[in-house]
Image (cartoon, rainbow, N blue to C red; front, side):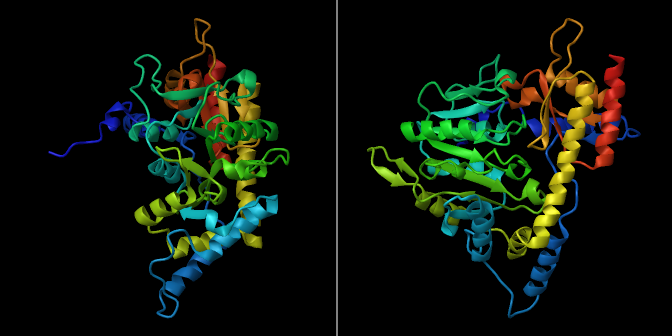
Length: 418
């Protein structure tokens, strides 16, 4: 029999979102007459922008003609898309990013996990808490942690940067050395954003400690405040210490189409066991071209259309619709007396659970079950995002306005009885 990667055995029983799906399936099977409204997983619900589908239809037609048919494309992405990304996402905001530093992929979740392929054992890893579970679980799979504590669920070997209400869920700098730091802004799950000063402090730390920041900007399009950076490369010095992940999923509704990109500046350095400086960009180039064949020409033409005049207008309409949902969630739950965070520059609303009969905050999974069984509304329990997430739940604004209004009315009826 082949030996297995025993690091997988360290993982907790189930990834958060499949466990949510399992509980919902069990409930729905037992209650087929109940209409369940899903506001847990961050999946979009509205159709692709017309500019995108028009471009993809045209690309499909090209693929049906010998003269315009395309087979394998460049693994890093077609030049037309990489140039559009640079011009619209970075040059327009004063960021010095070159087209050959852009690597197009099928998802930022994939890249956030795959990036560990190019880093060796022995790095100290810092993650925020609460945290997007992929950052933790992929480090467990890669062997960068010990076992999980049986009480807290936290993994030995990881540095947890606590986020709480007192700091508006912004993480503090590591108090000891960290080789790799995961940051996400706007944050999943809390909806918090990192101010320019806060992000600059992390860049300053990384430069001083020769650390690498893995910056997840999948939700940057939801930032409405000009004072909040949408890219870490808006901060001086970030080219020498940060990799940025971007996605078309939540920006333009590509969750089922699959498209993203990662920025790996050529200024980034790592080191080998001898302490010699090694360029990171060629390592990711080799990994990307060896293990990935690129996303389809059709999808990349759809991505390019996101940056067209019509595409920008239509995407902005999608984002405004989801943000309007987030505002509605914030307002109505606040009126119920709940303590609410996020939802203004992000599509997620982070909610403190109400107090139970003993005066303590209701456990996250208990409140999840309450909303599912009594309101037929699916949220995401905060405990699934880490120790500091206990006592909170996340609601996603990714839904139709009608569903959001109905879900809120149900929640109001249930909590009004409490």
